[in-house]
Amino acid sequence: MQNRPIPLFINPVAGRGRAARHAESICRLLADNGVAHEEIHSTAVGDIEYKVLAAASAGANRIIVAGGDGSVHEAVNGILQSASQTALGVIPLGTGNDFAKACSIPVHWEDATRLLADRISNDMPSRYIDAGRMNDRYFANGAGIGFDAKINQIARSNRLPFGDLVYLIAVFQGVWDGVITPGVRMRYDSTEYDGPVTLVEVCNGSSVGGMFEIAPMAKNDDGFLDLVFIKPVGRLRIFALLPRLMTGSHVSAPEVTCARVKSVRLIAERPVPSHLDGEIQALQTEFRIEILQRSLAIL
Image 1 (cartoon, rainbow, N blue to C red):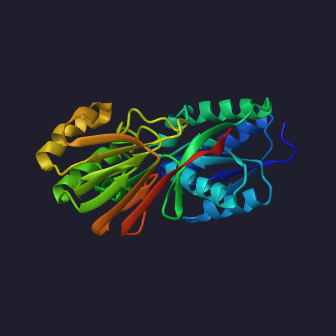
Image 2 (tube, rainbow, N blue to C red):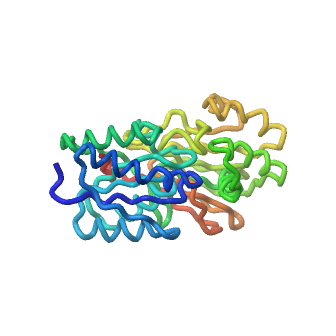
């Protein structure tokens, strides 16, 4: 049993308000299972990162985050910036919950809360997974450059309650708006590629957008990142590949290249969109991506 209450960070806007609706039930379930906790709500983008960094730096050995992949992204950046061994517990309440799936955490919040409470109450040891870093930011599930980042941006701007389907709808909107194929120079480990791309994904987990198995071979504890990039394709070809992206069978398509890597260096001919764990980053031209093996403890 823990000696002091575990900070429970709740992002009330996660999952289009799901986290706020279930916050009271989560707290009750944790308390009923003997987990003392301190409820902390985020109030703005970046708030969880700031508060997790403060808690981890102050010596918290465990924290819990109730939210989606964006909330996990902030928490991971807070933990890794602190250079602490703080262990992360996740109660998934987002739209895609790709990180939870990669960690075999139940995607239903009630099941996840019960399992987490049982592990904490029985003082189960943490398990360690890999994380990644792109330039000066960390990621837990993956980094995307190009068309996928554009899709994430469209999906985040859609406030209708479509669940995972919001990403599928965003694909159609993104294709209609036009497919970007910037020229890049890319080096991954000892291999080089020079030419245009539709998208580049550097994955720690297998799925993105909740429903796309972009890197079905990826495991977040194997000591590697999984690079998937697609050479230029048009609108019709994207629609043809879409069902295969949902099942992971796209990896055998002629336009798709996959590789297990430790690092990726990419320079684009012009500023391009990118994301980390679904969080949109500033337009940039240079990307330095590397794995941080067994750097993140999971409750």
